[in-house]
Length: 539
Image (cartoon, rainbow, N blue to C red):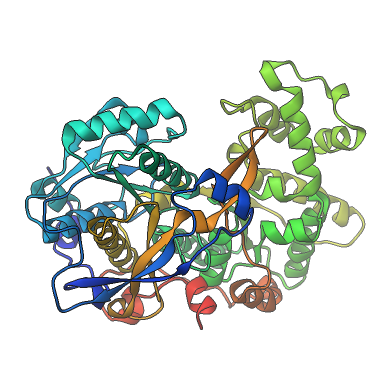
C-alpha cells in the first residue's frame, strides 16, 4: 500500500491520554441520575438502565477493577456519518482490551449496524489496527445508517454475538446512534443475554453535547479544516478585492460549526440559525441584513467579503419551516404539487423563491417523503436574493458598489481528515474509557472524557448513563425517546463573544484571521489547542 510521509509519521504518534487511564483503575460512582426531561416516560421505557450513576475513572494502585482477567470479546460498530478520529476510538478499545487480557478479541461489524444484523464482520488484529492509528475516515470497517429499532434486529444481534463469543458491543455514533445503543442495552438486560452496550459521542456537527459531554469527537478537526479553507478564501478576497464569497457549512440541525469557524476566522458575516429562529426573522430580513453590510463596505471601497451560512438555516426561518411542512404534506405518497394546496402565505413565499431553489424544495425527497433540507443550496438562494435587493437599492441611490460572487459548500472535505492532535488524543482516550467500562461490567453508558481545555494528562474519564441525556420527541408522528440535541446557546460565552465583535468584523478589512492547515508537530499552543468554543465555554 502506497502511503504519504504524513501517513507513515502519524502512525508512530502516541496519543496523550488522562493519567487515570495509564495504570490500574477504580470506578467511582456518583448519585442516581434522571433524564433531562420526561422522566416518568423515560423511566417506564428503560426500567433497567434508568437512574444509573455517573462514573468517574480514577487511578488505583491495586489490581484493575473488572470481572476478572478473563479475555473479553467485544464488537464495535461505526454508525452514521464519518468524523475524524473514529479509527483512534477503535485503537483505544483494542489496546484497552489487550491490557485486561492479551487474549481478548475485537470484532468490527462491517458497514455499520447492518453488519451486526447480517453477521458481517472481521476480527481486528494488531496488524490491521496499526495501519489505521491516527488516520482519518471510517474505512477500517465502514459505516452505515441502519437503525437498530426492531426486536428481530436485536435478536439477530444476540445470535451473531453468541457465535463469536462477544459479550459487549461499542456503538460509535451521534445522538440517534447512541439512542439506539441505549435501546439495545435495555433489551439485552431484559433478555439477560449477557451482552453489554457502550456508546461513544461522535459527530462533526457538535450538537451531541451537554453538562457531561463537553464536545463530540470530530468537531475539532472538521472546524479546523473548514477554517483553513475559509482563511484561504479570505486572503484571496483581500487580495483580489472583487468577490463576495458565500460559504455554506455542514451542520444539519445546529450552527456550532458556523459559529466555531467564525470565531477562528472572523468573517464579515456569519448567520446563526438559532438567532434567526429566536428573533422570528423572515428570509427577506436576512437578505436585507446582508445587503446592508455589502452596501456599507462598498461605501468604504470594499466590494468583497465572506458570508458563512449554516447548512440547516432554512428550517430555522419560521415561515420557511411552515412552507416545508406544507410541502411535505402535499407531496406525500409522490403526489403532484398543487400550489393551491398551500396556505396563501406559504404560496406567496414559494413563488418569491428563485426557481432553482423552489425546484429543490419539491423534487429532492428522502425515503419518508420529506424535503432533504441539507441538499438545498442556501448559499445560492442568498446570493440571488441579495443581488435583487442590491439592484433595488442601486435604483434608489442607496448603493453604488459592485456585487460579484462566488459560492462554496464545505462538508465532506472535513469528515475524514487526518485528526488533529486534540481529536487523536480525545478519541483514543474515549476508546480506552469504553474498554474500562466494559471490563467493569457496565452497560447503557456512554464513554466520556472531560476537562478538555486542560493538558490531556489532566482530562477526566468516565461514563454517563445514556438515559440521563434523553427526552421524548415526536418523530414521524410518534413520540420516541431520543438524546436531546444541543443547539447554539444564545446566552453562552461563544455566541456572546461573536455578537460583541461581529459589527467590527463586518466593516473592517484587517480583522480576518488565517488559521492555516492543521499542525501535528510543534509547540502545544499551535498543535494541541481545542476549539475556540471550548476555550470560551471553560474560560
